[in-house]
Length: 346
Figure (cartoon, rainbow, N blue to C red):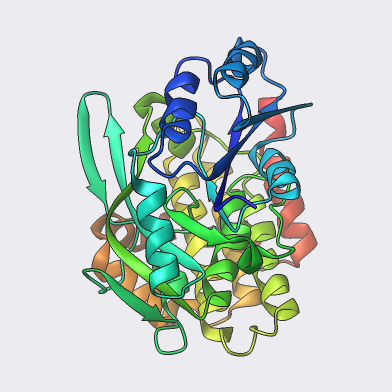
């Protein structure tokens, strides 16, 4: 059994793929396995992987599958992983040479099943540290989840900054062909850990393509309802793990917060008529009303407003995008209204 299995979903990543794989293969920790899953790439990614598998023979395993999205590719990796711990890395990102050794050593020394760190975000020639959390926790320390349950809300649901024991992950799998799939399981992983090590330093080099990032935020997202699918998966998996009552308030906060993030998206969509924005925003809020009638009073949401000025500003102008005739309907009608609002684009 390897100490760490590194799972890398690959889709049209020819530009950065060699750097990514090499940064993992040349870790100071050598007792690792790398599972690269080509997710139906139509560029030269598979050929690059085949060449790299010869260079790193015995360490790099290449899987080829039809395109099914990052969640699907990660699930193939999980099913074939043999490591004690699992690390997820995206194909356009890379790792510092000693980071697996460092995170694994911490996990063993402090007897934790989860170690998290910060991102080093790379935008062109610029690098900046992202804390990946809006909690008040600072410095290196063990976090007891029973004493700090809100941590599952304040910690980013991203996976790049985490080293996860295979046992902790268990039978959890990412939803496939779903946007924001990390959100669907990572709060469950964090809650299940009971305690984790909060490493307050960069552990992951995250490359940001500003053009793509901006487009992802302001472009129209027909599958915006995936956020509801993801937060409901959190609730389902928490129940299966016997954690739903313990984290009842935090599950509700995740539902509210991430629904409001998508409301923010819709408000910023360009070349999307205001009336259509009203349909999407009102329908999302209608679904939220039905699930969490008192969501506007949620204390964690109030805390996030104090931490994020842009979020507070967007929430202050939300009424400009609400039409109650779309808000006060049943769940199925609300979802149909959202889907119908995109048909004019087809």
